[in-house]
Amino acid sequence: MEKTKEEIAGTRQTNLKTAFELGIHSLLTSCSKEGFCKAFPNFAPAEVERLHRLFIQVITSLHEDIEDEFESLCVETQAGSTLNMVEQLVEEQNLDPLFPEKSNVEEVRHFLSEAKQNEINYLTTMLETAEEQKRSITSRLETLKKQRHDFSDAAATDIVNKIRTGNQKYNTNNNIGFHN
Image (cartoon, rainbow, N blue to C red; front, side):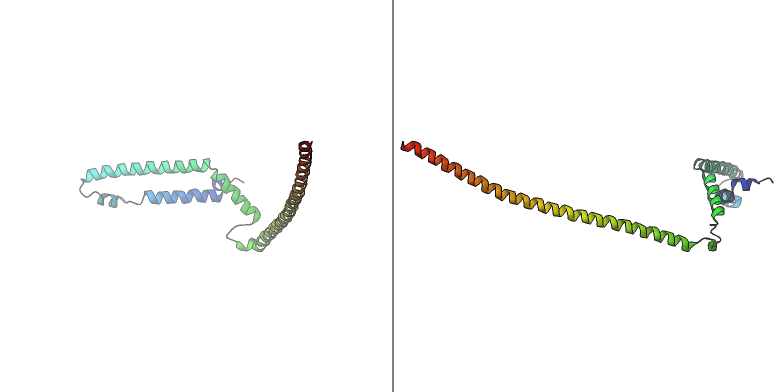
């Protein structure tokens, strides 16, 4: 069984090219010869005829250039193979938009809902862990501040006592020296 050119290219790719060609054709041929002649009422008929032939040549050349550019873009972006892949996936998974009853919207909704719920649970657990770590760090910081404060008071009292003792010894030694 031999495949037609449309079957090889894929109907979506063929439809894209056909739609483009119809669109470009209607844009470039929207001016009739009578309309063209009316646009140049002050010109002689022979001049209008030459202008019209030139116009046709320009439009034909423009049409060919636009089609070539479109084809080049399709090849460059791999639009044809992408459309073929989409068409194949649609056929394999029965997701043709013309038959919405074939797609299981409820299953997709359930799957997305479950995924979001799992994400919420994960983020909630992470938040609880972060809050616990914050409480632990805050508690440890308070303990360190208290220890520093207690150490400061004890160390200051010790230093003051040493200075007093040193002053008393100094005064005692100096007083003994002056009296002798």
